[in-house]
Length: 363
Image 1 (tube, helix red, strand yellow):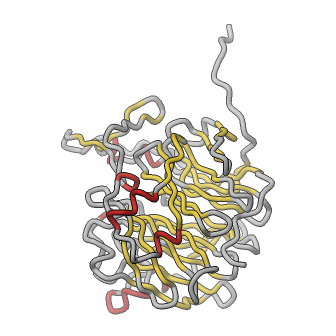
Image 2 (image 1 turned 60 degrees about the vertical axis):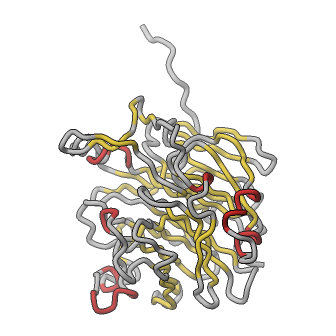
Image 3 (image 1 turned 120 degrees about the vertical axis):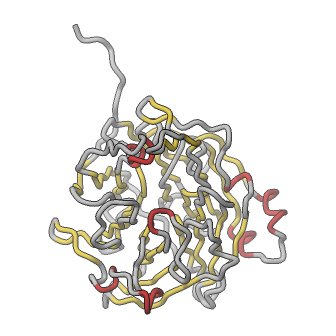
């Protein structure tokens, strides 16, 4: 006898299946090129940045760039958490410089611009010690090229043991500073108990010890006009936003920024977020194998709910008006299960049609 069961919906398509290291990031360029990153979290990562070419994964922009060179740490990728194309010929690579969540290697945490026409590194932005702290984990980045002479980047610090923050980077000068440092809106929700696949998610170590799973600001998205930045801690169900003009205004003390933060309510617990050209925000819900769509007026709806969506990670919107996202079973890693790796290959890159182009980053 068939009993009633949960309803699943949303038309998902498999784009690529991964049988090696676990991916986290994906981005689709304005010409349809697809880039992936594989942070060094314990898997055998042969290259941390790659491009999908003819149904294969190729190191990008070269294998040499993916080999750590101690003598030139600024131009070699160490452990990349996020890759983002900007719609105007550049792939931006956000290197944590922190394999296995270690303290960032001195000079290793960086933002790198790769020219997609020549497939060469064009510029590298490194950070001072007051911006990238010993506890910092650079997670994701968004861009706006309509302000300043060369634009600005906004980066989330998703630290598990230090203050969360939004890092603002002036791309003309390379000058960067921390905003909302340790604020409630960028910090883990201490009362949040994540539950994935029906079980509480927490750090469970080989020696039997346990501790709460807590990560700071992670998901980030920017409005089509570049004026609003949306963000959320990883271990929280809340969505926040703030004016990018306020973030850039150094005359406003950081302690006062909390008064400029807007609270949007619960959206589910998210890793990745992205914005389309109409200002809709798409956010994963890793507790419920779902994707939420948050309209500019604050109305939220679930657009996909599927049992195969085992931890929807990074999002990207392609020129084909598909929402692309990585599914990587992050919650099944050994660090959450007393040293037992419960992940099942393949990991996947999925997509679904949303009939909207990505939010622009320039006029």
